[in-house]
Image 1 (tube, rainbow, N blue to C red):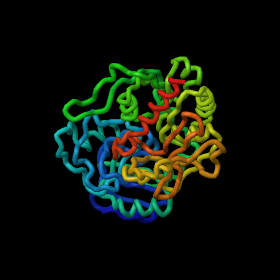
Image 2 (tube, helix red, strand yellow):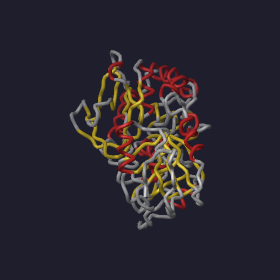
Image 3 (tube, one colour):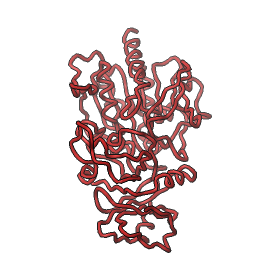
Image 4 (cartoon, one colour):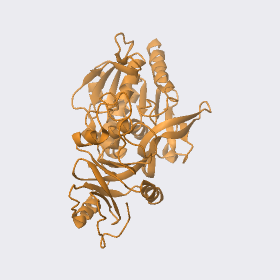
Length: 393
């Protein structure tokens, strides 16, 4: 049903109620699902086999349209427990097949109904292999995803919108997805038959800078024995240190780290200088690198999926990790005193750093495994071990 054509000759296929318009004029026709309307963003692909609800609610996908490579999306439905943020930040999603009817005991709502309830536009019937190859070979393009139940589209206007969108480079999106007020988090990880728990006897106090934090990261910190105080992305060092934290966490998030770094980097530098243990994930990793004097760059395709191999250079162990990022740390700019700790086995990009002689480290990937494998859960314990060691000194 899907076809890539020049927008100057654009007959609509019979039954098409959705279209993806790329900035180069390419069209992908399909069936619209979820909300009606249109949305512009960077078109990316995710290679994960599970966890579409966690992916769609990951704040790191702000400003992006997600192409799912796995065809059976919808088979576990949706529920109130598997969300990573209250309001999805993604611009829309693209599927190969029609949404699969749910066949899971935890399902509370059909995915298509859930998309509509969150004003998310989706397209099915798209040749996702062709689109993924287009992204793989030419980089992630800007595009507009549109759904009209009548099948009527103003293609030139959609093309103009795609071409006029500035893209993610230079864009600070952390402010849009961050909390606006400080709050405490005590909920622990989900367990079969028990649901989520509560940390009633925390041994440590961690302040988390929220650049778009996923809920399961906060749960992992709580499960590791921490009371977590979450502060906005724009919090000052004074705002953070007045809580007398035992550790400081730098969360994941969307957008260009250099743009967010204009206000976050000076704060992180003060936090590192305080001597308190610091742990960063994803955008937090990139911001820490900037604060230490390194640089970041926009990747051609990025890493998005829960099947990404990473080597721990400290142990030689290979981990399968969950990732979602379009920017990376430039290895050649790492300053003296900062060591690379993890490397991607896909493209050799930097996946982790640590400050020599200080309890400060970060990783590019998502050790909370939501969705994805649990190979890297040990990093939360490493952070807690640093906190304990710092307390003992």
